[in-house]
Image (cartoon, rainbow over all chains, first blue to last red; front, top):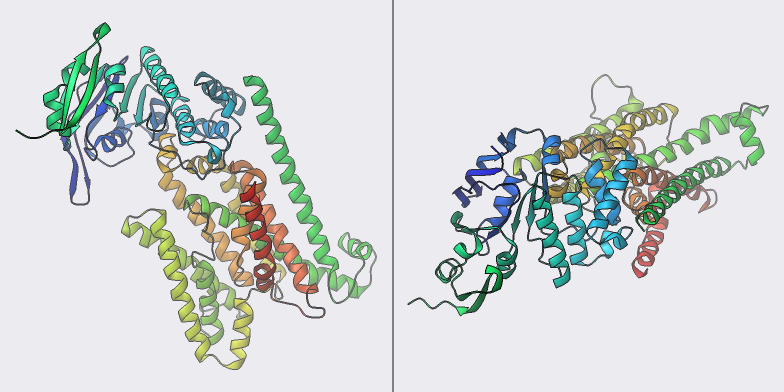
Length: 258
Length: 344
C-alpha cells in the first residue's frame, strides 16, 4: 500500500501522556499535509515519532513496511527530517553540513557528495551561503540550510517541524513552493505549521491535533471552520472564501464562551 | 557559479590539509628543540648524529637516547592523546568544556596514584615501578565507567554526564586532600609532584605503551569522522542522517577513556592541553572532523612539546612540573586566542 500510515501512536513523557492512541489518515504521495494545533498539542512529538527519533507505541508504516523495523541506514534514505532549529554554535560551513548529511550515514564518493550537496543549495537559492559557517548565519538562513540537509538524500517521506518559523515572506514562499514541487514528484510531505493562513494556502490536507488526538482532518476548508477553531484554539475566527476556491482565516480575538 | 563555489571549497580543503601538514612539521621541530634543550647543552648537529646512529661520545649517546628522547616522545604522545580525547569528548558530549580534566578523569587518576603512593595499595603481582601508573589507570577507567553507568541509569543525555563529571571531580579532589592529610612527608612530596604532572619519570616502556594505545584508537576515530561531524548539527539531525548516535557515543567514550587514562597514568594531571588543543585546531581548520581530529592531535602534541621545553628553560637549572607550565603559560595564550577569535 502506497503512503504513510500512523496508527494508535502513543508517547509518554514521564507521567504525562503527550499522544494517546493518535491515528493519522493515510497520507498519499503527492500531498502536502500540515499538522496544526495549539502549543503542546503533540505535533512535534508526532513528527519525531514518525521520524523514529522518539520512542513511541503504535505503528508507523511507509509504503507497506513498518519503519521501526527498517534498518537505520535504509531509513535515512527514505525519511528526511527538518528540526525546528540547527545549533547556532557550529563552525561547519553550510556546504560541509549538507555533505555531512550525505556521508555520515552512507558510503558516497566525495566527488558525488560535493556535487549533490551543491546542487541542492543551488535549487534552494542559497548557494551564496555555501561557504559561510553556520554560526554566522541568521536563524532563517540556518533554516534553509537545514531544509537542504533534509532533502539532499532525496527521501520518499519529508517531515518538517515548523519550517517557516524564522523565514521572511519571500523565503516562506520559496520553501513552500519547493515543498509543493517535491510532493508533486511523488513524495509524501508532512509539515508542522502554526500559521493557519499559510496552511490554508499551501496544504492539500490539514490534520488538526488537540490534546494528543486527531480532532479533525481533511481539506483546508473542511478543517478550518469557525466552530473548530473556537473549540481547539479558543479564538473567534472568520473564514472567508476568496478567488480560486481558496479560503482566508481571520482571527478577531479570543473566544468568549457563550 | 556552483562550480566556482565548489572549487573554492576544495581550495579551502587543500589549505586545511596543508595546515595539518604544517602543524605536523612544527610538532617535529618542537620535538627536536625539546631534545637539544637541557642542562648539558648539546648542539643540534651532535644530537642529530646521535639520533641517526652516527659517531658520538658515550655520554651524548646516553643523554639523547636514555634521558631526553623518552621524555620528549612522551610529551608529544601525551599531548596528542589528551587533545584527541578532548576533541572527541567535546563533540559527543556536545559541550566545548568537556575534557579529561573537567570530567574528573584526571583527578580520579590522581586519586588512584595517591592510593598507591600513600597507602601502598595496588593490584597484586605488579612490579613496584608500575604500581602508581596502573592504579591511576584503573581509577581513570573506573571514573569513566561510573560516569557512563550513571548517565545510563539516569537515562540522561550529555548534560547529565557533564554534571556527574563535575561532581566526580570534586569528590576525587576531596578524597585526595584527605590522603594528603594523612600522608608521610616522603609520600606527600612524591604525590604533589605527581598531581602537578611531570614528564621526568618517562620511560621507553611507557612511551611504547602510549604509542600503542594511540595506534589502536586513532584509526577508529578517523573512521568515525563524518559521523562525529554530523553530531555537531545536533543529535536529531545526526540520527535522521542514519547515524547510530548512542552507539557512536558509547564507542567514542570508550576510546577516549583509554586515551585519557593511559596519558594521565603516565605523567599525572595535566590540564589545559585537552581543552586548548581542540580549540586551537577548531580556530585553524573548522569543525569538519576529517581535518579537525588530526589537527587537534598535532596541536596537542605541539603545545605539550613546547611546554616540555619551557619546563626546562623557564627557571634555569630547575625542571618545573610540566603540568604547571601548561597551565601558567598556556592559559593566557589561550585566552588571547579566544578573545582575538571573538573580535573577528
